[in-house]
Length: 105
Image (tube, rainbow, N blue to C red; front, side, top):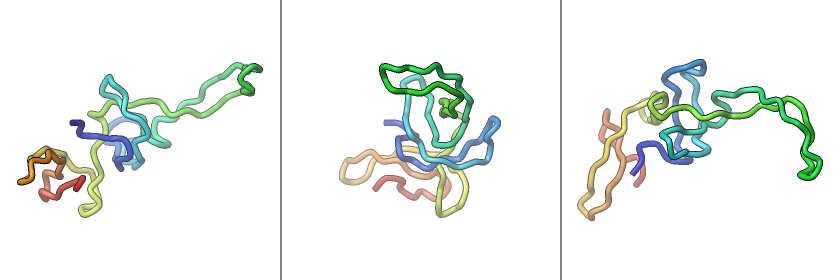
């Protein structure tokens, strides 16, 4: 089970976008995540007439390492560490370590 999943609201803890919030768009296999409107770069793209793509400079989201993001805790209003615990019915769930609140019920 992963600490950060697709669709989670995260806050960036390190790098040029430190302190900004965003939603995880994609989780990659090498411990990296793509966060919406975070770590934007300008990509010089050649036109591709067969695919109908025009050329030019486009803004693109690049992945950042999961160690540089924290799950956003709406109750506290800031990033929080995540742990795992097993409920009485046998389900393994994520929880916020500061207040023991279950993330995904």
